[in-house]
Image 1: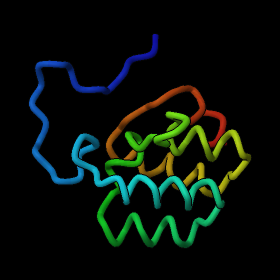
Image 2: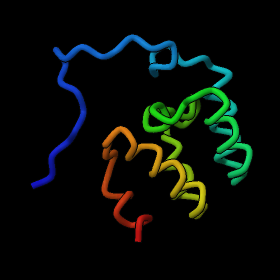
Image 3: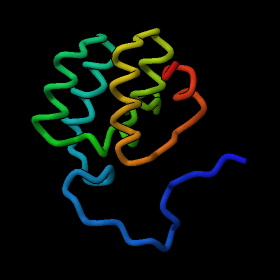
Image 4: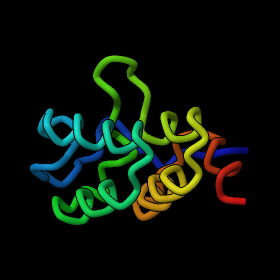
Length: 104
């Protein structure tokens, strides 16, 4: 049986300026652009510079609604997908079974 580590609706989350609800649109746009362009060095540097490791699981393209992991996997960008997946694992978040495929 698969279990999810998502917080329950009544759990309190720490208030962070980088929580998905407060993530600046420019952050989302740049993260999405670097992922779509398969630009791992820029993606990694941007995530480190703005301390966004715990947010990569929540970032969704404003047009398609796809997460960064879905974008990287659908385009076949293995290195970017691994980076995004590892960042997600820091918070023990499992988005979908996709992580099992790219972690082999």
